Length: 119
Image 1 (cartoon, one colour):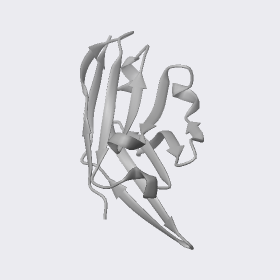
Image 2: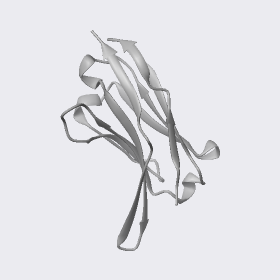
Image 3: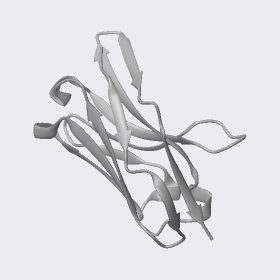
């Protein structure tokens, strides 16, 4: 089991920055993939960015060059630095952790944090 607690959301003007944090209840050395997803009203949840335990990063084309995902193993926390925010980035952002054991993937989600970007 992994509990994930997000923080750092809020209201920001277009062009501004926010940093989201996701604190895990256990050592993230054991978590194969950590990531961020978002869901805007009336839209499906979508991938924002992920980072593996080895440091490999995958991110959506819409955020490349603006958002940076990182992880601090000593603090059991991963971060999403969001720069040059746009109104279309407005959504609830969810932290995700995936633990992979042979053929089974265990998925854990945080409660979500609201990010609102005003124009």
